[in-house]
Image (tube, rainbow, N blue to C red; front, side, top):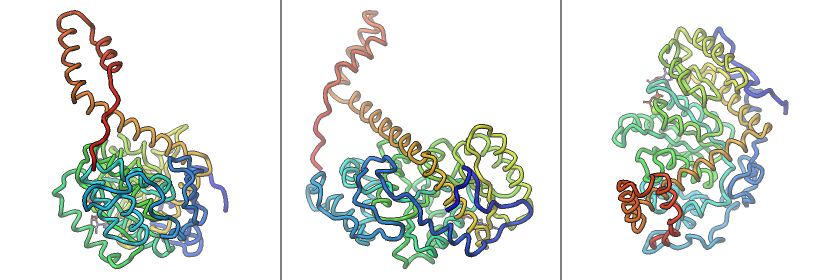
Length: 397
Ligand SMILES: Nc1nc2c(ncn2[C@@H]2O[C@H](COP(=O)(O)OP(=O)(O)OP(=O)(O)O)[C@@H](O)[C@H]2O)c(=O)[nH]1
Ligand SMILES: [Mg+2]
């Protein structure tokens, strides 16, 4: 396999037209036989996984149920996360759906689910797709699912809609569009909308990604509307982030400048069948060249409805992932993400503990001291932290 310079597609889209799929070369690239699937190599928590199979060989056999004690049984009739995960790996889609529902709606089960996932994550390739409403994210996701399925890869899709849990319209539309994959056991599509208590939607998305990863999906596509920081955070959860724009989207180009460029690994000019695509691609390319010293995203033109440029997009995503692995950047990104996540969870837990007895009373007492001029806020904060008692055992589930 040729080595490429970071940020370069093997067959970059050229100005002047949509680059249509070029059969054999793209197919070779798309197969991704070289994906690094070893969590130990990725330096992830859970290194030493039993899952060492190459792409396309992940199966129920790579994971055995009941090998760990953590969270093995829950109170009542609720199956343990470990049992649900084993069933999901074995192809039980309902078990997978239940796990994802728990991730979305039942944060108290996150520690149990997290424990069940240990040793089984890090193998999937994750791809984020973000961009303004209506730019063609779902259509592109559908086209990518088709391409990955042709290459024999199992694909999970998370459609993250942070705007509201009631946006049934868009998600319903997506479901209809995805109906061609409805009977395919190699495809699992799920939308996430509610904000979990622990760290919001980004944290829930991260957890859902891990569930799909542990369930054996080779590629996980995450669609999110790229409008605010929270959505950018979600996009940044992926190994490779694709930012989509439409031709002549002057405002979008500004938005890309404003923040999305920071997370973009691949800039997709979708709707390339429309006038102005070459110009938009050229503008974006010029913009990326100004990023001296930073990794330069590649620009690729796609007409998702026509399936044009999709092979090139797959090739760019594969090349980016290979470069990440080869340069050690994949490990660095995942390590930084893990640290962010731990920090977020720890801060949330700390905030919760400070708001509960006995620390809330201690806080009130210290506040009185500060108000009376007997202490300054800094020393009071230090006292509060110093007085922190160990967390109480979690309530039985
Ligand atoms: N001409 C053209 N239209 C496209 C293309 N891709 C998507 N569209 C159309 O653009 C519209 C929006 O597409 P979606 O895929 O739903 O866009 P989205 O970004 O997922 O939209 P939201 O999820 O609502 O933000 C649909 O009518 C698509 O048919 C394309 O390549 N060319
Ligand atoms: Mg959509």
